[in-house]
Image (cartoon, one colour):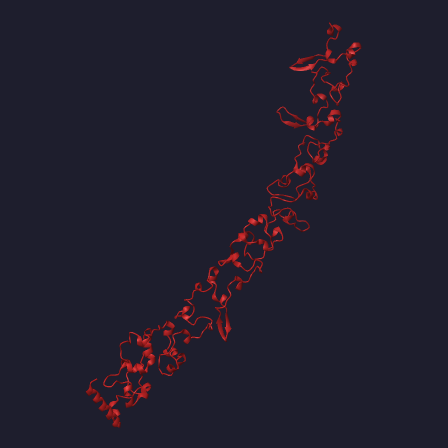
Length: 532
């Protein structure tokens, strides 16, 4: 500013101080209410610069709260929309006491220029809902009427702390500005308990309970125990297997069991042994593995293969009475136990496999299979042997249980009593013969009692009379020695020296039809026939 200008300004100011009525001629109008305390010529230079227009520096020297934000490059006044403008462009003065220095159209104002974007819910609110004295912490700013400064951008400035100081005050770490629910920015993966498996589909309030605290609803997110599954889940095993559920279960499902090869079933009420060790869990545990299972009797799991055959007096014995967990094929039913039944095992029966009697068909049968021989054994003697010799076709009349060859039939009941060597003969020697076709046939009735019916005539019919040879004339049933033969009854009575002559001296061996035989019937027995 020039020297002349300074002189001029000083003269004017001096005139103003001397002349009281000059104010109305110089002031362009009354100041607005916020600046009304600056009314008076003595205050002009607080806003005006002598000989120049109003300076922003003068405004900001007074409005330090705005100046500080500009210096920090924050807020609306530091935005591109305001930067470079004079304060007077928006906030003109001397327009009257009721003139509003701040004139914003809420419908068109771009709140993004303030550095705080209004989300959809925020944009629907009236300005004074947020820009209210109760939301301004700075007392000096709170006292300024109509100011939009001093409102903290933190959510808790306006909103109640639903979490009651248990979580961070920076709500946008989990929530977005469009809606508090759901907390779209929250990821459980970033927490100390990462959700996996079925936990992903569990509703939040299942773990984070809603309760009433300090007179209002409160949902707990901190301080929840999660080290063990039992912190949330009831232990259906009642601590039989310890508290480390992960040894057997996974977060996919409690019903899906892992690592069963290491599971110690002996800790349950049922010890697994032998065949049960290789059975799939699902074979017994049809539904949940923790569901109680009856296991006192085999039939609690296994169907009665024998269909109640062993039920007695309404009571059914358990499979374990005969079988073991080594398998149903084997059994522990002993001969001693069988002997307590209505059919004691004796003789050859003790060596017979069970299935020979009890599985004649496809299904095992233990009841009403019969106790008579004919119930199992075919009667091979019918129709050859008359039933009068064995009542009711009972094999026991002749045979024992030791072996079929042991026969004790009383042959004296027939017309042919057994004596001598006949007593020790096998029945088959007389009663089983080959027919012309070479097949063995039986014959008991109508058998001839003549010796020749069974024995070969080694004498070539030399002693035949009337077509029959009676061996008993010379022999008895003890042996074939001629014990009954008396040479004196022949046509040549032995006397003298003949008594001591051996038989073969007179009775030579001859051949007939290729067979050797002793000639007993000598046609001539004169002295010269032997002596010459």
